[in-house]
Length: 533
Image 1 (cartoon, rainbow, N blue to C red):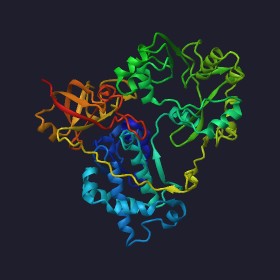
Image 2 (image 1 turned 135 degrees about the vertical axis):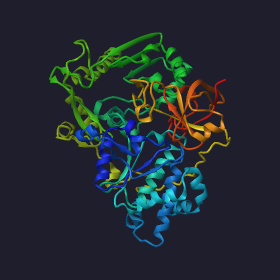
Image 3 (image 1 turned 90 degrees about the vertical axis):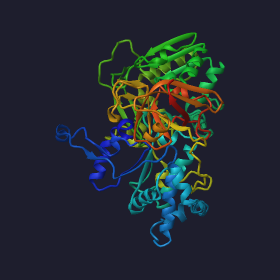
Image 4 (image 1 turned 180 degrees about the vertical axis):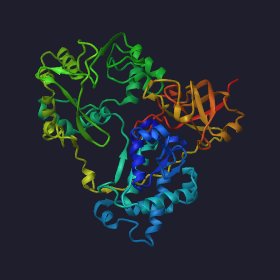
């Protein structure tokens, strides 16, 4: 849902359609911005409430049915190749890929009845999407958490890449897979090594440049951090921004784990609920925001950020800091490092005096960052090299490898079980809730609600606005529930439901995460819904 999750994307979609592009939305929920929008900077349109199309086709797939949809499209592409030699980019496939024959055999052996059932779409709808794909000279497939937060999320992303490979839509201008990755800190952290399992090659280069010996023991991701906190294995929690307790699944379990820490430290620009859930000792370290002036020894400082398209740019704050006592995040980290390791040979204070010095070290340690300070000062910054864009595939075979994943069964065995997705409202940004309204979904002054299909409501004797109880059974066998939520009819596929996080976080247990990616299954919660007694 671009309107809520990537609002700046709406203008690009409207402009693409104006140029004649085909835009296909895939979403279990029929969302307003999936069809039309009023482009914010078009003053006349805003004044006259003139909306612009944002799609040329909408596919209301069942939750988790994306893999079946994409495989069905691949089936049509293979069928077309029997009579049309241009349906497959055979030259690209021969030169740059491996595993095509096995993939083709698997796709052709999958019956349409199974694809239709798992996708929740008709064969005609899947064929219609495939026809759009076959007619396009260039295709980009973009996805977000609706694909990722499933047990088989990694397999689905690989299937998306399979489909793109068939027509050479990787490594050509205007083509490729395009995950919507969110905040600049998400991208930049991974690029700069904030990874619980960095490669030996990456660590060895860092050690060589910085004159240190990095630990080789793998760290913990969010899911396993929550478990370790609850066991009492972690004694210190330090968070750089964020609202860990509210963002993580099972808020209560996470909060209990935080309370077992000896020390919790939050480096933040503003207060949030996690600050109220702390260990035996707690610190809140307020820091400069990105829009505030950061003055250091060498003068005003710029920080470098990476966007969703891997472009790195400088960001210079211009606002007067909220307090003269605020420190920047780099300075807080440097002071912590010096306090913990007073004899450290790393020149922490020198780095903070001029952030260019940090970037000079990054230029030596990070591949693709050579000449960092010069590149980032170009008008639009620079784009980090991505080998696959140059058709340089860093795999054991040296080629793009087709995935051969089994088609998952995404339909619950029990007829009374629904698949619940959690999501944000329009007036919400991550865990920050600005109001209890959800303008695009026609909701005012309520968040304790569940959106349901009309027929599912009727089968359960639930009327519009009734209070309902929602019960989930976690993988570990524990039963979790929320009570007195308001049921509202919404255009969502039969067998599915949706509601807001973090209100529904309690329905997810610590064991409810994908074994492929460690992503919490926030789009695949199996629930039973009944009227509140």
